[in-house]
Amino acid sequence: MGLMGASISLIVPVYNEGSLLSRSLRDFYDWLSRYPAKAELIVVTDGSREPTLAVVSGIIESFRGGKVLTSWVRFSENRGKGAAVRAGAARSMGDIIAFL
Image 1: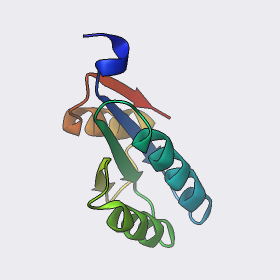
Image 2: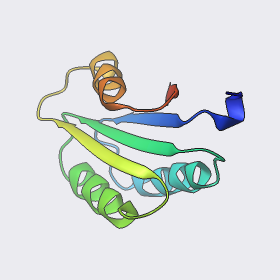
Image 3: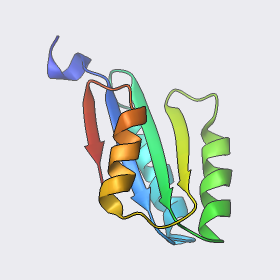
């Protein structure tokens, strides 16, 4: 299978990003929806508080049913970026796993 036939999982660890996150997640989703193979967006909130939780929840819900598989992992306490990336990777199904 060539690289363009490989599925991709994009992990986005976040910590109290708030309203800045809304546009970024939509941009990531739009890019993934144009990807030529299966694509997945996994957001990991790492001890985030409101309004970040509300933003992530609303955006992930708005993406449901689209071309890109979306999911959300929520840590109640901050565990660090490495733990967030590992949690997203453990949940991923892509041939290629990337994080931001």
